[in-house]
Length: 158
Image 1 (tube, rainbow, N blue to C red):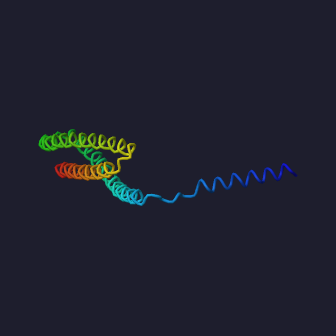
Image 2 (image 1 turned 30 degrees about the vertical axis):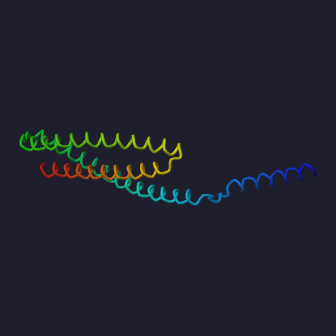
Image 3 (image 1 turned 45 degrees about the vertical axis):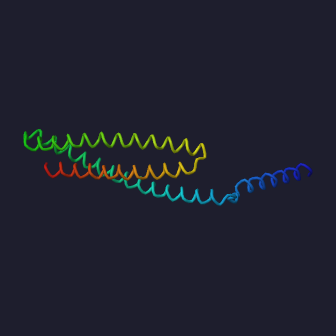
């Protein structure tokens, strides 16, 4: 009987500790709470941009697949005019792809700066880096829209 009582007491003690661990601590610093709320808003904005970018990427990949199939058929038919027009647009696409690549690398660098600012608890730098990343992501999405338009232009030539 003593063992049962001691086991029950231990279980109640462990249960109370787990409840206390799960309880959300009250925010002591109102400035920190405001910062967290602002960062959460920036994260939500960035999340929306990510979804938009993924949708664009899916559309671009679909267009590319269609174009590859149609170019293959045109090569077999031997229509040099269409192939030449497509090649000119592809050259522009290559330049745009290089620009996108460099923009993504730059954004990656800013993410690293944000992480080190967060580790250093430099809240102002974290906010500015988040805003910078959002602006960069918006610019990347603009370029992706341009790329999609170029692919649609190729599609119209074909």
